[in-house]
Length: 249
Ligand code: PEP
Image (cartoon, rainbow, N blue to C red; front, side, top):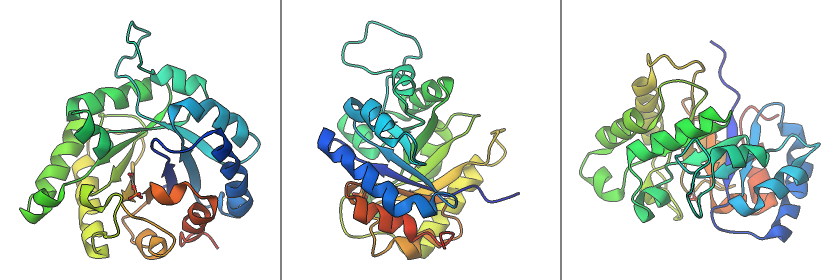
């Protein structure tokens, strides 16, 4: 089976203003030559998804969103945003189950799966985040935690992306070794195998990816791309990560 097209996804989290959407034009200037080899995705805050999609028109950049309501129907849910609305605004992908949502909002695997299903129901591709905390890694629980999250928070069918993001590697400077990344990605792939999914899932690595380490991480065979936080906010840095992918010549 042909390897899936790699995906480099930027998660702007709760950063940026309208003025930052100008970064998209700069990003495209620097990555247009790479877009045949790699899917390039930017997920701004929900308030800017529609404007980002308009800004990205005519380029090969993909726009996504972060989080959505678990409700697949319009409903009386003040403050929530549905997958249907985000799709209507031009989003193509949706990040769900990020460790910040799991930790700060108590999101469970079941809720994450229902959000991913809501995304699939609207034709969005969910990026389901999984990963262990430092305490869990130190206790030797990484495999059990990650496999458990994959089993319980990834829907059974549809086009899905899984992002392995060790919680302790997010927003810092340290990452797992390349061998550790390969090991957990193999575990995620094995856990997903044989569950009747239509498309082979892409498995991204996330956590302190930047221009300096992107090349070696993206060269790990089991890694189908990256989910990038801080370094996705600046076009120069994000473009350098995209261009570091070994399939970009
Ligand atoms: C993230 O929060 O998804 C992330 C990967 O952040 P950073 O790249 O800043 O570690």
